[in-house]
Image (cartoon, rainbow, N blue to C red; front, side):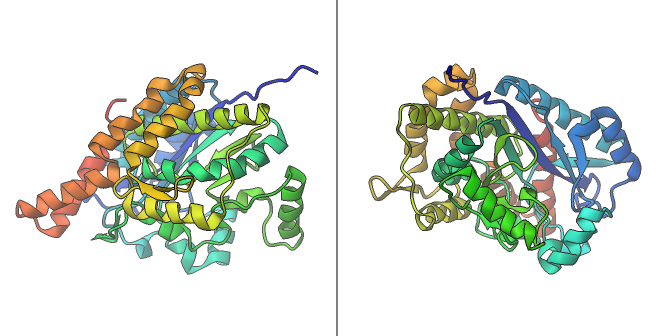
Length: 378
């Protein structure tokens, strides 16, 4: 029987926050006309999110990273144009620098009404945005197997995307405060590992039969088999303010999956480490981003992130080239050189304060950066 390689198709989802261009604060209620026009232009590729100040876009199923990048730019451009007609702007960041979550209103839809009732204060604080990357893996058992293996690399991907250093006007000291907020929900964090897809489904169905969840879409792990598509969905990433960074993370993710798949075809695999170890790197990426290094568990030492990135690029180079996304993956070196969105937000805030700006004005300057950077290069 001839073996068929997975499709490795790509889909990228991004969530944005809608800010008022004058006040730089979040909108409380998004104008109905705004969403209507976005849906008219983008159809199924745009959707309302839990909070009215949020909006989500998703590319269609793309055959290459370059195709996904082009479509993502088209989506950002259209959201920005429509928002601009209402004096608003989208920002691709996982938290707003100073907005207060208590003032937000959730979108009146049955799914979101149920979520608000079930989760109470935990979900009312959910003023965060992320990026999800879907990669087409048609075989269920392959998706299950690679879920456990790719988990090792999730902290490395998070570190490249951090964009949530501020919360309610305070520098949290974390590069990804978003995860601290998201971790309050149930069924989050690193994925469980199972010996087969059937075993995964048995555990999932135990929760469904008990009436706790409707389906796998309520498993909010950092990576999961998608409940809607035959894909493996990476969910740990912050929303990247710079669109090139979004594309880079998607390129590295799909290339890592092709590398792991190729190992499996050769009867090899990436060593599976206990979640308690990977969790330590997850925390380090959340706290420090690129700055203080991650643990190499094979060597048992903390190494600078730049060195670990070079190792990853070495592992995936042939696969990224086979998928025609090597240039996009190698852009990660530029992210290290200039810093992630989180680094740049903190630097802008600190520079403004040093130059005599009051704290509220310094925070507004951070929002101005986010507005401009979200649509730069489109």
